[in-house]
Image (cartoon, rainbow, N blue to C red; front, side, top):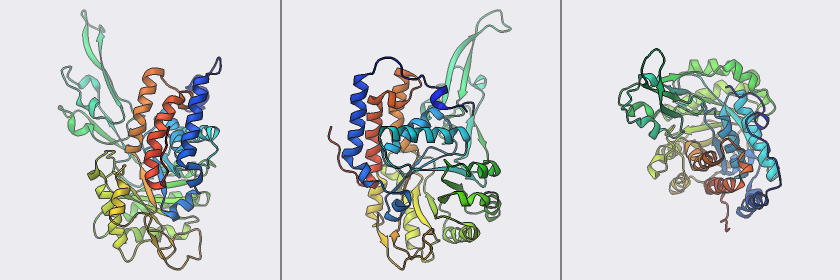
Length: 420
């Protein structure tokens, strides 16, 4: 990351000149929206939200490192009442998230969401980037990679070059904007010349362990395939010295068939001796989709149905991810899993969630690509008109983004309608 200085002081101009009365009125509308839909009265502590089944997490992306968007996304979704913001294990990214939260609290004094960073124990689709050499691209290519990229992370431009030639030549310049690419993989199959490569990586677990000790980081999420116990043990041993600093430890994994629940129990037995806080399982149904259709969320709901039917559920809270969108809550309701409660004897250790304790069977939902998409439309429009900007300095855009965010978060939090 090249942007390591304070975001407010380094990449955005400070507001100068006379007070803009229109902006003041728009910020008033922002506060009115948050209050009218009921965010302040319905936003509880993140741990209580887990127990009640109305936990919402914003996934900025384990590989998404555009600090401008991350800062604005964090501001918008903090006002919308999310309980957690998940981001890349990168110092500049963590700072961007916290600056967005701070800015939101200056607009309206809501409680802070937890900040979570992500790490992986092996190759994982969330930890990769696309890359290619634009000079290898034929000039007559229709550039479908640009069109299909949901993050606007590919930019190709024709340029004239006279270097070493006595006449002008046209070359392509640009390529993948690494900070914006979060590894969705949509560009790989559409390239007609098979020029796009995958750059997969594993986050440095030791550096992540040190980052977890920061006062502005509250949680960690370990991405795993669920098949490699040895790799999970290795990363856990690197991270466990930092467990005492955390409020939540999450494990994200896909459904791998009949062995999934037993693998989760094996991982819990590895973690349990060192857990000082609650743990959460992220049921990753269809990773990296970000689509809007009802079918997209089917796999995440199916994963939750399998967990609900299991007799030997692992300890911890359960949260959906991977393909989640505006249809996910309806799908959970059809299965009778939305905010239903498992009643039993209370666990003596209040720091841990027991399968027999009284809390919602499915604790909540994480929104990633879809959450970024519905707000990203507004952010792109703002940048076209104003360049890099703090979204609160363009409150008309903030109001539009917040309406989209509260509509989504409200499906879980049960916000009231907003008129205005």
